[in-house]
Length: 286
Image (cartoon, rainbow, N blue to C red):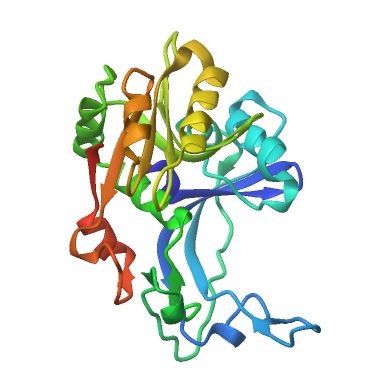
């Protein structure tokens, strides 16, 4: 099970309890589904609700301050990226190992949510604005592409292929794929790092663009590489297309250009699921 399959909730400036994610569901007509009521805005008169639910199984019980070295990955993201308005960030393997030794095993009862006549659906994505129908169909955006690439690279063989194509002399074994790493200059879409560094903590950064890459995107990756310093093994810019001049500019640099493809689903004229996109995703050198 991956690090992302575990959840530890943030409460103020504290991390609280460890849960394993047993199921993820999208509920049809969730306007009255617990635990959150719908919200209606006065100006627009529109009512919004959240249809997505996680089924969690409590594993450990604890309440620990985030001001600890074990929580540095999450704490840095909170400070530099979103403040306490952001409810969660993906943690790294170091954090999971640390919280797995905090507090004690969960001994209490766990109250599950009760749904009457629950109907679930599979969210889909499209590039066509006129086919967007939230929450059933969403606009295909960078956040979705980032999720696809993270899931794709979570398979060691796929990660090894990408590293080889990019000419990066880093073994795929023992690496973890993380999202939204905050830096003072901005935040990196995807970070590949050693799960258990010993002496050196090598990192590879990935910037993702759904459309055609621009010169400023290459500059952005270069800035992140310089900020991380000697422990950055390289950078990767992933986009749908690359102008010829940009390819020439990147030839002798640390940033490798990778073109993503979605096969016959590339245009998404018909809404498609995350799994369909994942099955058709490919990454090739530009």
